[in-house]
Image (cartoon, rainbow, N blue to C red; front, top):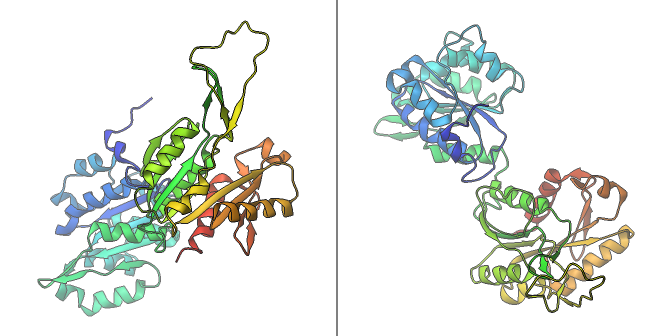
Length: 410
């Protein structure tokens, strides 16, 4: 089995908004080509798989090995019998093609259907297969104002997305890599409403010690909370995840605080609430009861019977609005085998008790949920309205929850 390229260690280190996305980065022969390395790395840090297609003029400026170092992928510098242009630009082969920087020459070839270079052929196939294309122009201002260039832009403007250059020192300079990244993230779901919001999420189960070996816990995997953290990172939020001993891998791009017991989770929540939050989502399946007096030593396993006294764990959600009145608070309400109307009523009771802005309710006792917990049907409930998600896998459930939160945020 081949080893992962070392450059791939940065993938999703800043977010997961582009996770699973295959992006083709075409670099034409502008001096601005050196910035394409930075753009490739930014895309990777948000989860993308980046493949570079470099023109002869670009490789005269930057060696292909540099692009391979940056992305971990082979660089396309010529078309061979392997049909590289089909592999990367045919129907559904990639999610996005970016030309950064794009010269007047490359623009003209795309507008006029000229396919005599790797880049022009990749673009021609991509345009025909309707893969989204983003073009960031870079050239002298006089070239940009050439009527032929203007006509080419006019012809393509409803077929591709252009990122306007900046006019500095007589040159139409390509936009900065960060600007390209922002546009791409918006294209794939970055939210102008949520961007920059501080979001605190709890996820996973907790364990309550009976003795140093034995614990009380529940069957929560933490998957919904982890996916929510990933979703809000992708939306451009600053996310902190307080995570109990769940089995799901925590997302990259979020600050992670590991806890085990309900006491540790409550302490971590109170500590984090010393700073200001915009949204708090308490998705963790916190134990309702904990042993009153945990044994300091392991209980003798030869005993035929033991008696265990439990005490109620304080509901930490009830204290959130007492600490931060204006935070948007989302709670979860899980019940089993009750009618939908009763589930909604119990969610509304939780809104009153905990001063939640939104409660996500579901019935975990249904046969369908027990058969495959990766699918769920939740109901978002506020003080006046409710909306049902329908049965979906949890990756789609968290998008439903995000949308329900997003439309209620000022």
